[in-house]
Image 1 (cartoon, rainbow, N blue to C red):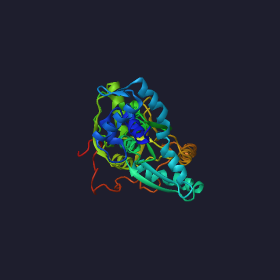
Image 2: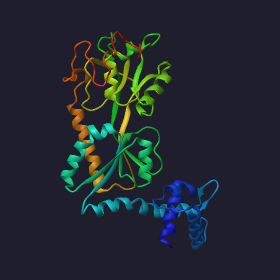
Image 3: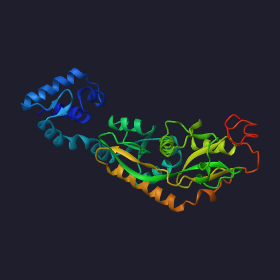
Image 4: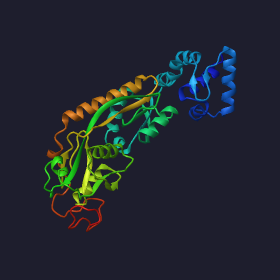
Length: 329
């Protein structure tokens, strides 16, 4: 059998059709060329491998795919392992916060095990990470594990993040239950982008509980959520990450009973030794960080001034005066 024909059939079977396969094949090839070569494979085997519309593998196609899939799915891992003799390379996709706060420690520990390690970083969330993994443009991703995994994507959970609210220290609420017990919530909800999976998870739970409250102020990071809460612009949605601190001027109210956000590593194919080592170092960092963490409310940000009226970094002078809840007054 022609190995190239088998490779094309692998992509067609894996992605559920010729047109979908053409978009995923990591080199340029046109749909008619794929169709013609698949026909040549079927002619050689004297059998039909799949039904075109709607797409479905025949018994012969399923048997052939089961036989060749481990080979093609393991090629990336073999390539990485072979290249480790010269310099191991990892291409990692994750959001900027993970790149800034957590990956440096993981990569530093990994380089002690693989002295010639090199790596590349891509700023992306889970949907784009999965696309890049399937296109073999990434080796690993670190992301919030929401929804179902795309076929061919494997995942391993590292931790679950506790949701909560940041409220100004000047407010009377001592618990989230007390905050939501009122007939009407007038405070502005401050959260990260609507693309952030944590906001979607929180709003879905509010809807399930019949609580009408929606995001009124979107910012780009959890740090900014805290800054605007401290200035009195509203109540912030946040999650408790390892070694988390509550911004000066804020109080942390855990959202007990709300779903936690699962965070983990995603990849395709068989894990290489380098990929396994990366996941091990991530797990070790999480374990060390969680054991060292104190309750957020006992760890205020010491470098930030706590005097009344102090302006948070990045917030215009004069903002927040005489404002208790609504953004913009």
